[in-house]
View (cartoon, rainbow, N blue to C red):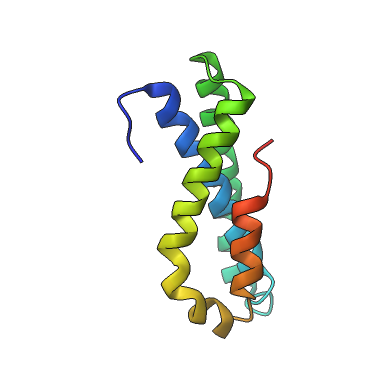
Length: 111
């Protein structure tokens, strides 16, 4: 994830955090009957969304364009899904369709 190139570093953070936002959004639905847990997930998601905005903006200030952000997002999110794939059954146990979630993480636009 780390890069000596700060433009790429911040673009990767934005991509990873946006993928985490998608995952947290999917997890809120199954835990809706546990309002404390749902609110916790929502707070974390909002915080991650702020990271996305800051990191994307900072990366653009350092010279990233939309094409670079998209390319980095595709790779970073694919790596996130690869990391989480062994946990697919756990997502399913929570009532989250892991295949659908992983497709969403890898295909959703970063804009």
